[in-house]
Every structure is written in C-alpha cells, then in structure tokens.
Amino acid sequence: MQLKDYNKFPTELPILVEDELFFYPFMISPIFLDKESDIEAVNQAMAENSLLFVTTTKPGHEEKREFDDIFEVGVVGSIMRKVDLNDGRVKVLFQGLAKAKIVEKPQSSDTVLRATIDIVNNDSYQSIKIDALTGLLREKIRQLSHLTSTIPSDLIKTIEESTEPHRIADLISSMINLD
Image (cartoon, rainbow, N blue to C red; front, side, top):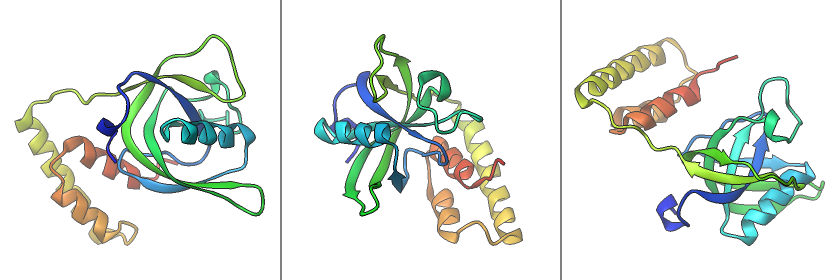
C-alpha cells in the first residue's frame, strides 16, 4: 500500500520508539518488541488502520519512552504482519511509507505515546543542480563499491536506476555507518 491509501495528514498516531534502528520510507524490516508500551502501540495501530509512527531515541536516552527522549522526526509506515513469539516478544514486519514529524504532543500522557503526525514534504529543487549532485553521488558510490565489499550490488543498481533525489539520498545514508 501507499500512504495516499490512508487517512489525510496531519493525524494522530501511536508512536513506536526504536533504540537501535533508523527506518527509511522505502524499508521493509522486522522489528522485535519486548517493551509493553511498544507492543501496545502496535496493538493500537492494528486496531485502527495499521499506521504507526516510528522514531528513535536520542543518544543516551535508550530504553526511555518520553517525548523528551525521542527525536521528533521519523517514518510513518504500516504494519504488514504481527506475530506473537513464544518468549513473550512480538515480531512485526514494518514498511516505511513516508518521512514524518511530530507536530503536536498531547497534554495527557498514556502508557503509549501518541501524537499528531504530519508528513515531511520534500521541498522543490533546482533540477540542473540536483541532477549534477546525484550524478556525482552515483559516481562516488560506484568507486566506493569497488573498494569495499560492504555495499550490496543490488543497492548500487537501485541507486543507479532511481530518478528521485530524495530516495537516492536516503539509500546512500542507509548504508553509511555513522558510529
């Protein structure tokens, strides 16, 4: 599904806080949950329209689930599948759909973080300048891929074939280790 198949934005959504992974709009990834608040966020999303806002904790705030502990930007996506595991954890298959941000936090707090979420629209750009920059990025990524085996060939192919500069930037940033 695509985001246009869902409700209009801004809208209120449950928030899933991830301590280790950062998600991009095009990603499909499993998420393993053991915190009750995260599991309840998924349950609320499944009871509504399967949309969920996923964001990460700020450095040094891992394991915390308050608004001051998380970034206000993240990804709106859908829960494709949910499986209860024997050890009490929950596994969800999450598909990122669009970059988004928290625009309004509720006054009352619940066990599950919820907020009004809006989509981050990509600004317009000068196509000549962006075409030159994306061409340069593609060239540098090709060169880097010859120097290291850590860049999957299918990712290089996707970058080569993509015509969307924002997607190219997301693809490249998804493979860079920022530690």
